[in-house]
Length: 344
Image (cartoon, rainbow, N blue to C red; front, top):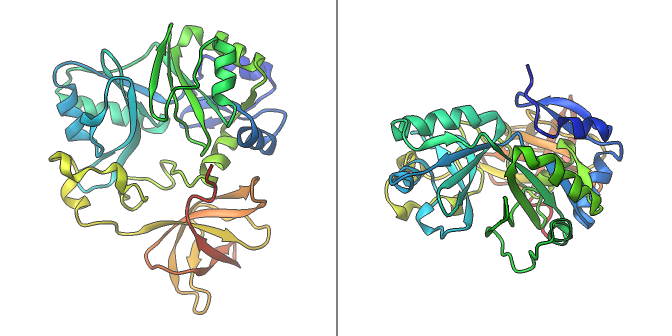
């Protein structure tokens, strides 16, 4: 049985196309379509249901030592009401999950990928001896992304977010709001009680924000060069491979996976812009143009609504500039570029 978020009925009423995703029944797009939703986020604001993401509460006297051992970033640098990107690695430096960590007044809160929530929870509980780690079952998340996100949320909820800085958190009434996101744009993410999700969703839509599904979320994050677990990350791939060395703090002391990470990356995540209209997909081979010798493999690909061309993320083992991508037997020329195709 697929799980459903508290907004399932809202999605049906809006005419969303629902698809299975990580064990959940989620909206992939609304009647406006993926391109319209994508462009709404790039130009104004879009509203995403991200209630499928796992929320893991870590609390008690041993919370910080546990997080320092379990995660690559330095949780000790967080003040109350701050948040940071971080990674949980296995003993070999591979990625169990990439995460977002909040330090709230009474506890820490980890946002895990939906596909990895059970795995991350069990792993943390095992490290903690079963103490102080639990699911935040009663809460869920929404995300408003785009240059008008803060203004739209502020208008809808009657709160001034103009002074809220990136990766900072505001507790307001029964909400936790952070300036963060996964689209390459400005954004406000909301942690709310599940029972209030429908009311808050409707209030934000009433402020003129476009509802957006997983399709636009994927094209937006890919344009911004942001990784998706199961594509750019897995248990054989390190945060250094993915280009997130800045989220690995070797100077904070020992943590799981540190010794292998000290050896550096084994491959490099790059962006590729392609000629023509064929779309590269995960698993397509990246080859040297002259000899068709293998250089790497595509992890994600799409047609970019912003740049109106096919783009891809790929892991390469050798630095190069010109490549071809084998798309179902057709050798499509491409050029290696910065993996962040789009920068706000």
